[in-house]
Length: 449
Image (cartoon, rainbow, N blue to C red):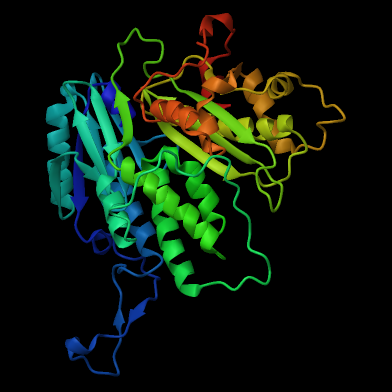
């Protein structure tokens, strides 16, 4: 969506009906049988042998995906960066991009490919039973408001939030200004705590929806969803109170979402990937593990983000920040490959803003010292990516560290400032990156190393 906005593309949605039963026939050696339903009036001594996969079978999703992939490749589409669900078709000035999630297909195309896109949709719907839903308005529960003339696209989930508030009886609650009270640190209950099973069911239902929101459009509640999800197995009244606080925050911001904006072609951030990484050292009061977070932006809005507890205990803030930056660099490398496959090659290294000076020096310094030799070797891939020109770590003041909102419960003024950047409603204020200051390796090495 971020690329489609910048490249002035149309975006259409196609829905395939009963996709699994439109898969190709099962292999001849397949031995799957079905007891006929009573309505079939079949001889009880008979069973049916399946010719095609049915809903409920573990092999059905893969069979359908493979069927659709085979068809796309036969039509000249090429998978992007070896991904199974993202495809591109470029013929001269005609550019089309496609992605699918089970039976929901998104098709983006530029003005030159308008006739070709119409022809492809007609051919697709002659091969599979489905319908062309026209310009994109909703996708997987996400509302999409695409103003092509203004060059903006906003994604939000207001309907889902209002439904969640109604189900929890908080439709008329008083809003609050932050997802969690500043400084919140949730802990496990003591071993002798008596748990309320009904409360646990309600809690897990709410947290599951919050995680879905945080994954798709509500990057601002990513940290809150992470903190609450850690206690899904044994929630107490304290945890439920924190969950209701997050719902009260959503009550006042239910229409918020991410906005991507078409930038002038001369703008330094047009089609340029950049990101932030941050950590909160020893944030977990139970395990003393740190929380690491990153957020990567493209064309005015975030396209990838994560707030997650690190898998090992960091012995210093430097180590925690270094681990978070390593995860961010891995995500940046993957996104660079995706963008290259979609015709948007990142010809300079990806700026990655980091507010810890020691972590920056550790990433640039290839020497293993006594205080860092215990860090897992796979995390030192960050050094390799810095050396190869894939990413460039840039020092960023904590005041401008947008990823800070994904690592801890901030006070309202700081949180609101970062939220505006996360939603694409305000430009980031981190130091500008000037790519001409750094020598680059060959483009192929930057993308595929």
